[in-house]
Image 1 (cartoon, one colour):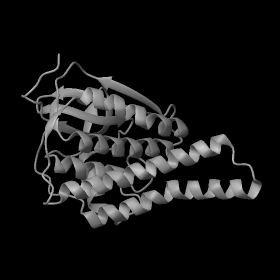
Image 2 (cartoon, rainbow, N blue to C red; image 1 turned 90 degrees about the horizontal axis):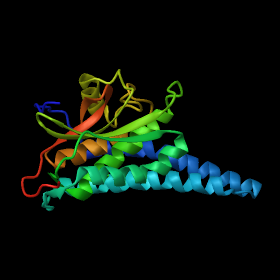
Image 3 (tube, rainbow, N blue to C red; image 1 turned 120 degrees about the vertical axis):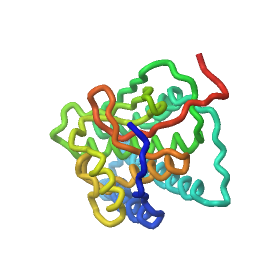
Image 4 (tube, rainbow, N blue to C red; image 1 turned 180 degrees about the horizontal axis):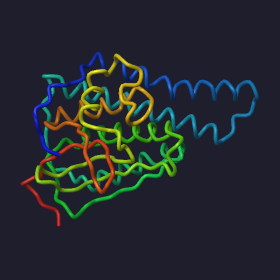
Length: 241
């Protein structure tokens, strides 16, 4: 996954529109379930769990967006530090697990070797990966023809650096379609139908955060699966063994 010039970048206004569109889904679910519980007087624990799961996803997307805005600000100096991506992906998979279970999506973690840390911003990297994960899980749920539904969290080495991303059966996802989706962010309700329905706001938030860390979200392939990933540079300050 080579790094090249890519002039397409989603602006903050476009991101806000995409996020507002995507937030309609969990907030509508929360509202309907709460209303049904009030009408029937039967708010079961499963309903409470679903409400909590949807609310957590919505809050994560908003938190990631706010972090992206903070990182874009010229008043914030982004401090890069050695980050263990393998450990971070374990945490991300854990935080995504309840959301994925709610949608019937299986998560799989694949790490291609034992790698040292990368130079990144730990909070930013985690927020970007969570935004990417929530979006792909939701996209899988919108594709009922896919059985079984799954999302792979991958980390591997390429000639250009260490690559972290998420993958699945997205054979229709290509670099030109991703660039078009970035251009359509905030302008179309479904800017990336190659992955699924929805506003794909989490993908654009993830891309914005990666760009603030001198990387970008790109179409990539790992172990016969297609997805979105970012190239990260290994840290030369510390090596984990």
